[in-house]
Amino acid sequence: MPTEMQHQAMGYDRAATMFSPDGHLLQVEYAEKTVRLGSTSIGMVCTDGVVIVADKRIRDKLIAPESALKISEIDEHIIASAAGISSDARVLLEKSQVLAQQNRVSYDSPIEPISIIKMIADSKQMFTQYGGARPYGVAIMVAGVDKSKGHLYTTDVTGNFFAYKANVIGEDDEQIKEKLRKDYKEDMAIEDGIKLALRIFKEIQGKNFEVERFDICYVKKAEKKLVRLEPEKLSKYGK
Image (cartoon, rainbow, N blue to C red):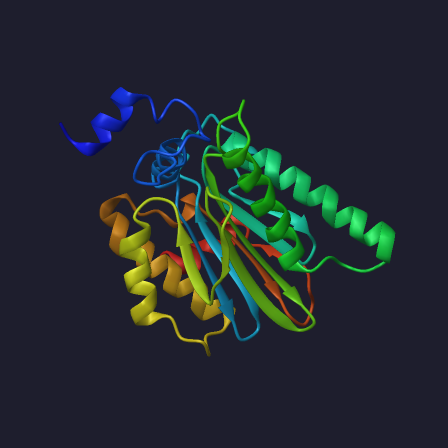
């Protein structure tokens, strides 16, 4: 009998806080598989700011476009995207928005991006340690600017987080990471980053590629303001 089936038979996957004999939290690993089924987002730190290009993967014409946005505003200088269970992501992102506003009220200054990712990661870790609830089935990518510098962070299901120059979450993540390792350059501008991300998506998706299915947001270091590309402005990238 395969090891995974043995673990299930012995009940090690019945609680998120129960370690298997070989040191795994099986419910957490199952949640990581959920993330890899989620829609894909690519984030990059560029010379003039940060950008996230996210596949909305919603093609139903009956859905109002404004309700299917993939990238969320945490504060005017911080954006975030998620892969996995979108309702789990919504809860964590709303907590992040509250934290950002509390920082402005308390300190009269914008919150640092690392404070947002730390709070999200701490919340995720808590649900791998205490019983009575399942882990958050979502990976979250946070991009923002702080003191004229761009930052990109990603946190996984376990509550770990890392800073990146460029990263991807969601479906086909390993394949896209290989392309980023090859083609991403630190001297890229935001415009170049958008073109690279869409080119990678086009290579991965083939005949299913449509530029209208993407949500694209960036924050420039100079303005420190979120900019979301409107559908009519995406057409120039579809060539």
